[in-house]
Image (cartoon, rainbow, N blue to C red):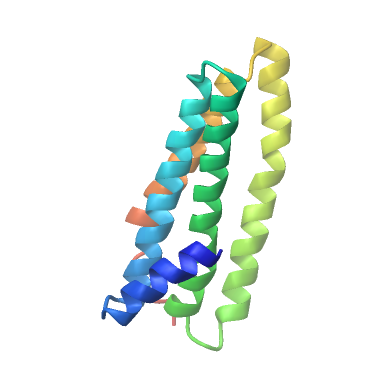
Length: 139
C-alpha cells in the first residue's frame, strides 16, 4: 500500500532499522485491524459498521504490505522467493478457513458477532506471533 510505503520509507530515511520498522508496522496494523473488527460488533448503525470494517481492512492491508517487505529484509537473497512463497501459501491456506468458520458460526448462532470476535482474536494472535516469534534473520 502506498501509505505503508511512505511511513516505512520515512522511518528508514531517519535511520531506523528496516526490519524493526516493518515488524512494527505489521504488529500495529494487525492490532488496529483486530480493534476495528471488534468495534464492528459494537456498532449502532450500518454506517458505523462500514466505517469500522473499512478501518480494519485498511489496517490489515497496511500490515500485509510490510509483511512482504519484512521477508526481503530478514531473508538472505538466495531464499527470499522460497520464504515469500511459503508465507503466501500459509496465508492462503489459513484464509481459506475463514469463510468456512464464519459460515458455521453464523449458521449456529444466527449472528455475525461471534464470527467477528473470532476474526479479531485470530488477527491479534497474528500480531503477537510477529512480535514474539519473528526475531532473527534467516540465512
